[in-house]
Length: 128
Picture 1 (cartoon, helix red, strand yellow):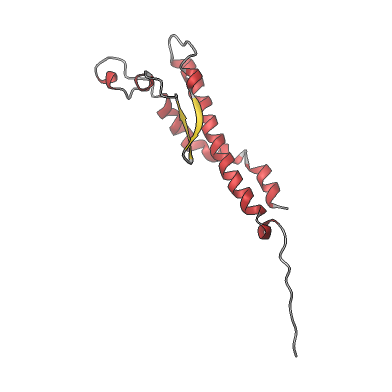
Picture 2 (picture 1 turned 90 degrees about the horizontal axis):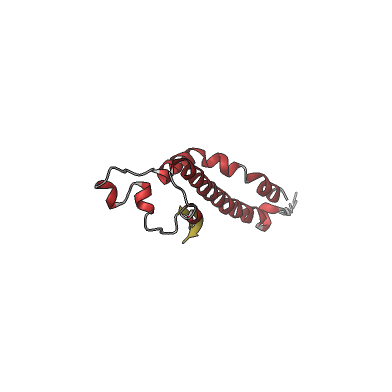
């Protein structure tokens, strides 16, 4: 007795659409977390800065550097002093606001929830 079987593989898993959707989701999730971080830094600065001019907060941004997203202040010279990591913080009473460090801790704890909000549109692409 002889028989043969033929299998036809079609759909997102087999034609590469699912792999592309996963990659695109990862990139979108990383960007969303970074953008949320920049937003939270600006919100916190509004509450801690005594005389905000808007100049410093206007330079807070999420940007892709190399292959990673980061939140930075565009290298503003007094940024380390405001954060509390500058050399002047060791010699003055002002110890900084630790805004970036505080927001990073919050994002570490909430990044999965932020990324989860991006997931539905990519799941639809994986389902064909």
